[in-house]
Amino acid sequence: MDINVLKQTARVMVALGKGILAADESSKTIQKRFDKIGLTSTPETNLAYRTMLFTTSGIADYISGVILYDETIRQSIDGTPVPQFLESKGIIPGIKVDKGAWKLANFPGEKVTEGLDELRDRLTEYKEMGARFAKWRAVITIVEGIPSDTCIWANAESLARYASLCQEADIVPIVEPEVLMDADNTLAVCQDVTEKTLKAVFERLAAHKVILEGMILKPNMVISGKKCPTQASAKEIAKATVETFKKVVPSPMPGIVFLSGGQSPDEATTNLYEINLIEGSPWQLSYSYGRALQDEALTAWAGKEENVKLAQQAFLERSKKVSLARQAKPS
Ligand code: 13P
Image (cartoon, rainbow, N blue to C red; front, side, top):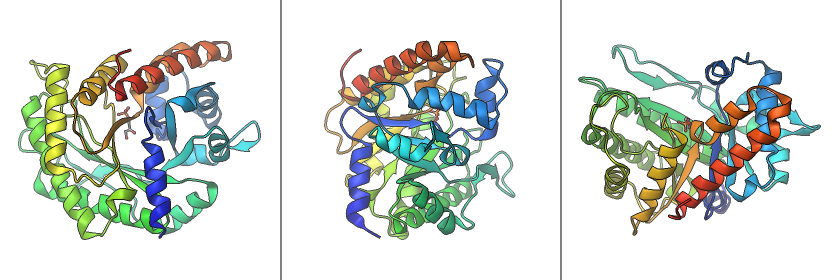
């Protein structure tokens, strides 16, 4: 393990004004996204879409790294393997290494993320292909009586085992414990569950001797559930989010990159702006958005070659807005 390599990569991932593009939708998830534009996902259409995103001129001003899916890291753009294509633009290639969230036995309605089997070998292969960071997503559901402590601890333990294997291979782990935002819970409940989850995650990371300076946290914002009748304002979301993270996230970690989790592009931008308006956080507070960065571009593209320029313009504009928000600058 080379601690300096890990630290340097992590720092560049959260460089000022920049964040991560999550373009690692699994085959099932990308089909869900393509359903909106009536397109069938195939390796070819997936590549056409991602090529549109990655060849956007000027995007490296706002995007420090891209999370790829296994299919994409093996593909090429104009004859250049995708990871090397991204590096040539000054963007760090990363890779999703988890194998999805599956039912947790004996705990109906809860999930645990799988993918630790042979992970050491898979990381070696991804590293040879050019990946310099990785992602593992754990899912925590809020319903009456859920999440259980067992679910939180099972996911925290897996995240820590994944993170330690990544660091062994000089790959920066993005540790993603996602408390889902789609239930009817209040902001206070989300705050409580997020705090409990993060406490467990950092406890297990310490137990597995994960070096905090060489990892990035990718959490949810503390927010009202989508179906909650009273929706907290952006200022309330920002206050609760920063408060929670200051309580439980150790300061040596270089950065927190939020997921968008189903917020609209505007909501995810405004909330990030309000979060960054609050001064005194020890970490960079940045983004690793999937939908919030891509939604407008996907709609503009609609699966048609003649729309590529328009789609790239939408992608660049949204990326710039999110980058400004991350610097506490209005757009
Ligand atoms: P969203 O921003 O669309 O939630 O995706 C981020 C991500 O990578 C989820 O794992």
